[in-house]
Image 1 (spheres, rainbow, N blue to C red):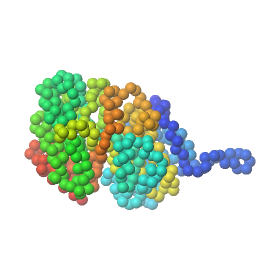
Image 2 (cartoon, rainbow, N blue to C red):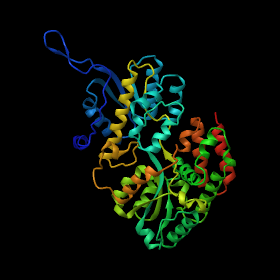
Image 3 (cartoon, helix red, strand yellow):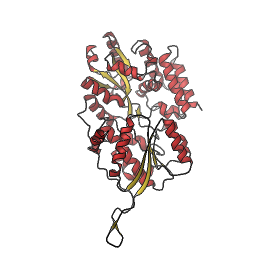
Image 4 (cartoon, rainbow, N blue to C red):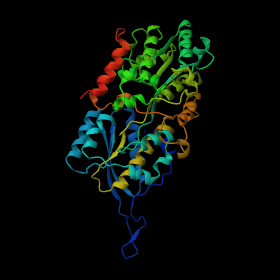
Length: 443
C-alpha cells in the first residue's frame, strides 16, 4: 500500500483549489501569527470493491496537501451498496449536515435523494469554476446538457468495445478490421473455420447481454435508447434496435458465440479469451489495460461494425457507455459551505481519476490527462494508446440502457429480457422488443 501511495504521489497534479476566506496569517496584536480558520467539511467515501480501498487510502493521504485550508473529516465506509445507501439516506433524512460530500452510484440509487431535495444542484458552481475545461469534450458535453447537475463525475468512463487477438486474425487470413456487418460476419466465419471461438461475452451477466445488443443499435441510431425511455418512441418501432437484435440472433444461430452463451458469465468469457480460444471479446473498456498487459501489442481494439454499410465512415464514432447520470460525488443541500464543498467534490474526483491514470494505467478517465499533466506509469501498449486517442473522437456516448431505466424494476426486466434473448432460441426479436417496452413502463 505504501509503495502504491508513493508511486501515486509522484504524479500528484498541482491543483490550485482554495477555500473561501483570507489565507494570510492574522496577527493577535503581539506580532504572533494566528492560525487561519479552516473550512470544516465531512466526506463519506464508500468502498464496495476491494480494489477501491487502495484508492480511498491514497485520497485520504494526500487530501490535506491538496486542501490545506480545509479541515476534512474523511470517513471510509466498507460494505455493499445497500449498506452505504442506508447510511447516507438516514443521515440526510435526519435533517443533519453530518455528511457534506459523498459518492453516489447514480441511477435509481440517487432518485430518492434528489426527489427529497437533499442534494445540491451544482450547475452554476461548475460553470463558474472552469470545471469543464479540464474534461474530455464528450464527457463535458454530457454533463452540461443535463437539466440539473447533482453529481461530479467520479468513476472512470466505461465504454462498450471489442478487443481481439491479432494473431488469431492473422491465422484466419483477416487482414483488416471489419467496419461493416457483412465484413464482420465474414471475419467471424473465417475465425470459426480456423478453429477459434469467433466472439464471446459474459451473457449470463445480464447487463452484458443487453449492452452487446444496444451497442449494435448505436451504429444506426444512438438516440433511440433515450427516446424510448423518455416516451418519445417505442422499442418495437426502433429499426435500430430491431436490426441489432436480428444481427445478434444471426450470430448466435451461426455458432459464432460459444454453445450455451447465455449461461457463460463474465469470468468464463474472459478466461476463454485470455487462453486464446476465443478471438474477440465484447467487454467494457475498463478491462483494456489488463488485456493489453496480458497480450501486449497482440491485443487489438475494434468497435462495433456498422449495420448499414453506407455509414462505414462513422465507424467508432458513436459508442454506448460513457458517464452515468447522477453518478459521482454529491453535495448535501444543507451544507454550510456549498462553494467549498463543490470544490472539494471536484478535487476528490480529480484525485481518484489521477490515481486510475497514473498508477493503474486506466486511460478511460473523464478528465483530459494531457491537459492535467498526468502521465501513465509505463509506456502504453498499442491498444491502450489507440483507445486514448479514439476517446477524443467519440461524438455520441450515453449511459447504458440499464442505467437510464426510470425504475429499478425496469432495469431488472430489461436485463432479464436480454439474457433470455441469448438463452432461448424461441424467444423472438418481437417479444424481446415488447419486453423492453414493458420494462420502461414498469412501476
